[in-house]
Image 1 (tube, helix red, strand yellow):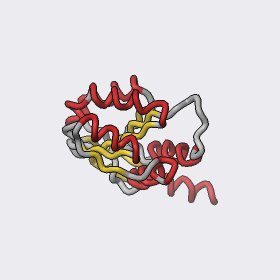
Image 2 (tube, helix red, strand yellow):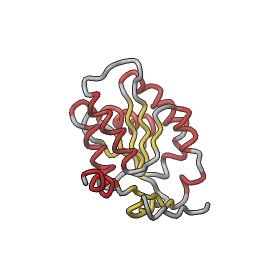
Image 3 (cartoon, one colour):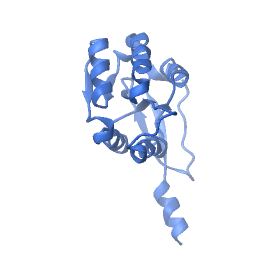
Image 4 (cartoon, helix red, strand yellow):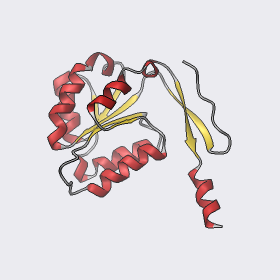
Amino acid sequence: MKRIKSHPDIASHTTTMPKKKKIGLVAHDFRKMDMLDWAEFNRDVLKNHELYGTGTTGGLISEKLDLPVHRFMSGPLGGDLQIGAAIAEGNLDILIFFWDPLQAQPHDVDVKALLRMSVVYNIPLACDRASADFLITSPLMDEEYDRFLVDYGKRLKDEAK
């Protein structure tokens, strides 16, 4: 695959995702069974990567797939924030987040922050099964990928002038 080149006016730098990706897996209660079914269907791909999940979701996936999953706290108890911090620290490459579009969550602000972190740090994000299917079957899953980061700090400084 052709590696991307950063646009010098918007990118502060690039970071290289390794062949073995660090994948975050998160699902709200009414989406957990969908996530489990999706993960089981894609087990052969997922087993080649490092998996991370919030409390219950991570435990269910680990048990069902018999694969190691690094577990954070439950989403409403801080797990969403932990996943967001892992993204900001460069410790997650991809996020598969099956969120529930029909039910308000008591931690909606955390959910929104997690989605925002995914965009700010330019990591692939799938919020539904079709997007997750496209993402997991991409040829980029099995090779290094240069991901550029927008210099939002520069933008904020410019706007403050």
